[in-house]
Image 1 (cartoon, helix red, strand yellow):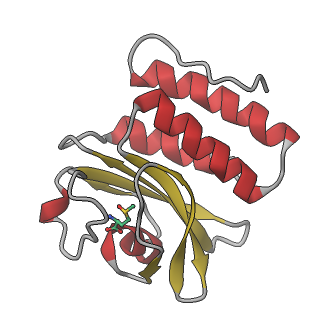
Image 2 (cartoon, protein in one colour; image 1 turned 180 degrees about the vertical axis):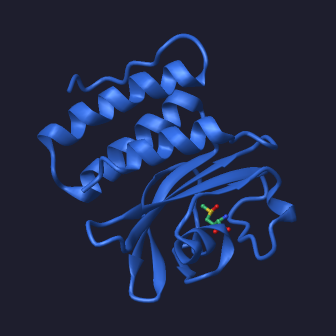
Image 3 (cartoon, protein in one colour; image 1 turned 90 degrees about the vertical axis):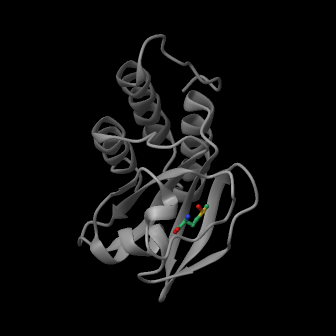
Length: 157
Ligand code: SME
């Protein structure tokens, strides 16, 4: 892959489509999970100018902070806690239009207003990590984000 990020003109559908093809190229030539998470966090963050974009990995009964872009974040999240722990427990994407209305939301930053968390699965269907994206605007994420982000993280091995 060319080591500079290309950002499509147009709406988020077009931006995600180009991003997806760049992630495909990235993972074709690199199989290290952490390296790929690091570049994918960067690509998403700088394509959409999100507030915080990153991964937490499942380690025992906790999620542990993994590659991210953005301000300092909490290092560990328990199973079932916060939006991230809920995505792990429920095994499905959480779209949160207003974080203050999500019971148990963990506020790493007071700037964060809406959030999406997408679980990653291994070949046996176990959750191995989550992708967490925060926005400083309300209701940033919808079905389009959910569908594309699920496709993008499914490329990580
Ligand atoms: N808000 C998340 C915690 C992680 S930070 O947003 C980076 C949660 O409730 O799980």
